[in-house]
Image 1 (cartoon, rainbow, N blue to C red):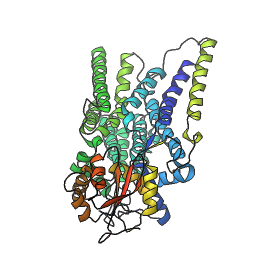
Image 2 (cartoon, rainbow, N blue to C red):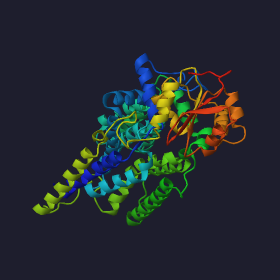
Image 3 (cartoon, helix red, strand yellow):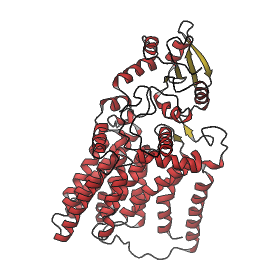
Image 4 (cartoon, one colour):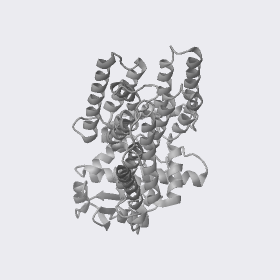
Length: 491
């Protein structure tokens, strides 16, 4: 086990280990499993909302339908523990592809360090949801385009990757943008190379509309990123603040990248190409626009930074080969082997499938935002005729754990009408107008988060509220009206 082989292992196993240790949030995840189950049962892509009573039956541009199917299959095969392993493998694959791309210019250790830095900066966006699939597609497209001249045939896999990407996550437009910048970079290349890049960008753009919704996927992607309700209601869609953990890492990494580029320029008076600078500038804008955009900078910047680091280290840009080194002593090789084996064993031993799994939430401590008792109570007491008001961050879990009981709002901010979001915010605040709003929307079930919705809990517990608790635990409570006159009820 040489030092370079150990660094190669570290570049992949450390992210896998990090993803293995981290719990999984059900936000976005659980509803995707439910939607995937419905599509597998019907044999068709859902195009109308089946989950809420505020948008029931309304058209739904289900652009992420492919993720729902994959997650449903993953859950059927291995439950929540199987999905946790799936997440760890996707994270390892994404960081491994960054490492593979950086190796085109850098020796093993700097390439591994750069890929691990990408993992750290983008760590906040590596939950198991549609975006993680988009990240894997993103770094795969970058890897193929970075080596498009050395392996031109492999580069023609880019349209196929973007085709899959367009059916998995709305970030697929980044793949089209990357192909377009590669074409711009090849405008001064020999004519065959330039023509090949032109064909590649045309095929990639065409592939991006091969979805059940055609060009509508583009309007979905653009509309979501500019939707005022999304930015107002979801913190990760708000402007990236340098005071947050993710924002601090983002702005620090941007400053480090600027220092690297400036130092490389001082060495040989060469800046990255104009397309490279456009790429970095675009990713910085995406990262600053919304906190969930930081990950695209984290995983996209290394393709420009690696050549600059190689120039700084005076390594060959063409081969990226390190200078010959004397063989490591046998004792050091054994230590390296021990570290690699220990990491591998940790990944295996810390898998959640070894933990007890006695509830809907699977292995102990794996799932966040999964109030099992409250979901069980609603599943037992509710029916399709009910209208349930559930905390937005729990809604995805209830849509999976209590299927068939329509909720008011969920993770799909853009699907629910703006008027419904206004009503939901009044109810969640628990202040004046709460009871009137519940009566007006004919709510028949209310789930209250004890930690986050104390005012709402007190309002419904009041003797004159007209509501009664039908289930309670440490997470919260489930309420029904004391009188069901004029209100649908599953009792």
